[in-house]
Length: 401
Image (cartoon, rainbow, N blue to C red):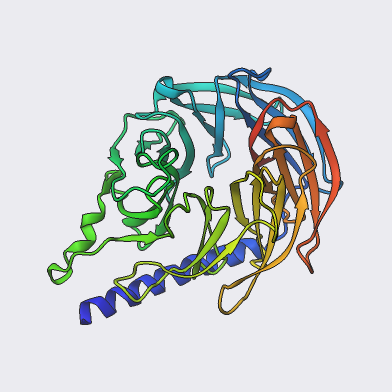
């Protein structure tokens, strides 16, 4: 047990360092109030041609169109590298799916392709960086796989260093949970060399936990945690059958994890440090829909406000943003209202870098609606609406020069 206690202390110490860094960053005012905003889209059977650029005025809460940033097929998820020089896109195109690296010219609002590699799976739907910014993680939805690509000094992607397939008992939904479906991937740091990697798998009703070895960019399967005193256990956060975990958000102090269930339109809250061998422990499940709603709905996006006080989740079908207050001590959620997005199918939304606005992308009505966020109540009030955005499904910000 001494080894276990020492490991727990080490995890707590390193996590606290990360919290302090995050808190410091959140407390600093934004250096710019104008942001290059890149919008990912679906191009198949739509009028879209790729990634579109806008300028976001964070004083007025308005978008100004800058045109097509680059032509590329089905760039449904975008991430900007921490150095601000490169953009990576998941080209979600079935068996022809790829991952593309671009350089950014912020002044012209244009992207230039650096290289493109196969996604090593079908329908990549989420991208994330490791804590060093040297590796890119890819969640391939249809294949249920997670790939790791090194990021070269010039921004290009190198040949993959890892490829794993999620496995475990399937959920009860025979249509949507017929196999593993990796839908989200992020790292949670445990030290300078390795990290835990969390993967939300819609098909397995699990948030799986892998170990990432940053020195070589390798992933170890969940069995890495089964060596303690020959004790075998399932190293994953388990959700209720049929939940269909889609995306995950962490509390600002990293003590709690909130998992959005696409199929159940619910949010499940976990303590990050559970009592069973550090496996996250669920303590609350709450609906993302208002009481009495019985129509079709697919929950889509989830995010915690930079203040740590509010959690937001989007609903496709009800076409709304649900708002919850977060108890600062327990992490428990309490409904604080739901607000129409002013369009159809809000697949994604993003909170701007100042924390004052929430931008909801309505995929099926080709619009982006900007809402002001009330810092006292979390309530949303529409500030502006941009029409004619073809099939918007992802949005990221970059400060302008």
